[in-house]
Image 1 (spheres, rainbow over the protein chains, first blue to last red):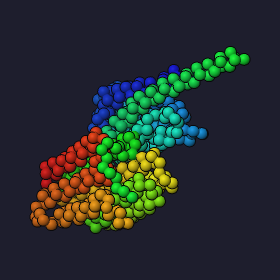
Image 2: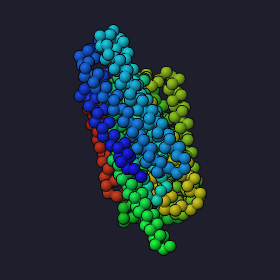
Image 3: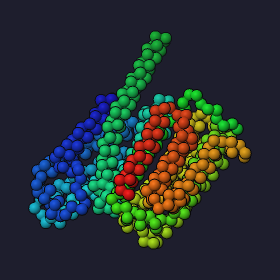
Length: 248
Length: 191
Length: 91
């Protein structure tokens, strides 16, 4: 069993979180968020004043999002150990998680279009800005499904030594619940349920990054354990073979 | 049947992991409650006026239904511990009946409000009203699923692990009750 | 059937119903007359007393490990006080 590849995928999480944070925070200044109530002129000014920072920041955010696929793969490998049989939950997580990566990339590209010609008609820049925000924070669906799949798989793990502690399963289910209010940003331009609001922007952002790091720690532990177990099993097999040789 | 003798050693109801979910959920709702109260303070007149349109009687009925379902679940757990799974199943069904009643009442309440023209985007009060009771309703529906599952686990005299699962589900349900107790006060009664 | 009357949880349920009725009455003007601030304070306090009773005796936290009990008591007290503070600041 090759643990190196697995650890590589798992450690991609750290790289992703660091690069994404640098992109969204000091570079683009998309943290804290733009307000849905801001005027077209105000938004256009943001893109005109910080053009190269926004372009670079978005480049980084988009660039590191591919790493999500590696992390999803690491989760998939761990889930394969949990689920007996064909593993439908594993595949659910794989597809939902992979789509999640796309949902991070596309808004970055849309915002990049806005930053590409910052001297456009401000109404157009406003449109593209709206698009990016809505695309990043509204599609809770794949993340919710992904987290529920992980939660159910962990809780349904019937191995003698469970792949992950059960509380991680419950954590994933809780995280799924926290992503849901994001979908309601469509109704509001201000308040806690707008895209700038505490329950749509801050909670999902903090929860997503926090979940990433918790899963990183748990996956690492679980991979190392699985590796030890398989080496142990391999040694036992080797010893049995030697004994059989000696006996004959 | 015997009521439990007082435990000297602490006993964690259910499994450890479920408390991650329960406490997390309580934290999230605490944030909702506090945010609601904060924004209410900025526009008391609007909130007070809108509150008058709420059907307080339906709210009270729902509170009784929630409290009763919680009681049924508590008795179910005691009954299961006493080694009577069939009895426990009956209590679980009663709890589920109360929960279904809650959902039906909510349906009528929402219909009434929407027919009168009060929707999610009518004003800030109604935003919170629908969001908070809606999210709570989601939890009631989830809880119904959990109670249903628990009913199935009690088809035979429960093993220790079954009892633990029962306690886990029961704890979740009690949380749903607690959240409604606070919601009822905040949305319907606070003036 | 009489067995359930002996259960602590049954008495608790009856008390919770009574507390709900009391809360309702206070919320509709009983006892505090024109003083809405006080009646609302009573409503909030009663709500969290009810919540605490469900926590301690339905959820059985009274007999749970002290750490968990502390967390839940802290939740009850913390949320109640914050809500009351916000209410008094505004009303």
